Length: 176
Image (tube, rainbow, N blue to C red):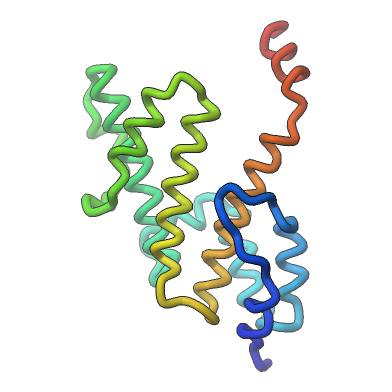
C-alpha cells in the first residue's frame, strides 16, 4: 500500500496547548484509514490506548524518546515528593532515568501548586513542550503522526476536564 503522509498531514489542523480539541482520537484514526498502512494505524492505536505500551523505554526512535521523557518527568515528581516527605526516593525511581530532561522546574511548580488542576496543567504543558522538541525535523513522516496523536491525547484529556459537571463532582466529593 502506498502511503500518503503528505496528504494526510497537510489536511490536519495545527494544534496548540491552549486550543480546543479539533476532533476525537477515533476521528483521527478514521482520517488515517486508507492513507497509511493498517499496521501503522494499529501501532498508533496501541500507543494511544495502552498506557504501559507508550512508556516502553526499550522502544526506538521518537516513541522511545517520549517514553524516556515521561519516565524522567515521573521520576522528578517522585524526587520532589520524597524530598518534602523525607523518604528514600530510590524505591520510587523507575529506570532508565534521563538526567538531561529539563523538567525539574515543572515538577517543582506542580508540587507546590495549591490547585490539582493547575498542577496537572503545568505537567501537561511540560509534556507538550517535550513533544514540540521531538517534532523537530519530522514534518511529513510517521513520527509526525505519532507526535500529533500524543498531543491529541493531551487535548482530549483537557476537553474531558472542561466538559465535566463540576458541581456534580463537588457534590459527590463532599457527600462521600
